[in-house]
Amino acid sequence: MSKNLTVCINSKNYGNALMVRTHTKNKDKAYECEECNMYYKDKTIAQNCEKWCKEHKSCNSNISRYEIKW
Image (cartoon, rainbow, N blue to C red):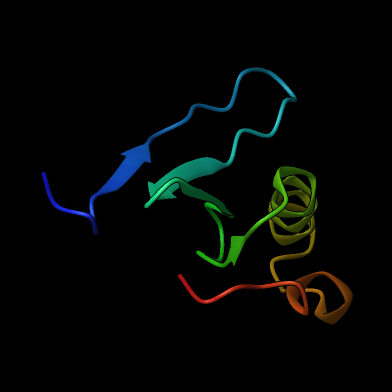
């Protein structure tokens, strides 16, 4: 089995709940905003990003500063 295995779990938007996409690589997790495709270590920040993106059709620099390279 490859050490660089990446697993992507697609999520759905259930009602008003924001469900970001979860990625796993080498036991590390990242959460992806499905609107702008930025990655975050913290699920709550990714959800805030997705909410902002959907409502404003733009990115928020106060949120996107937490983006990680994945």
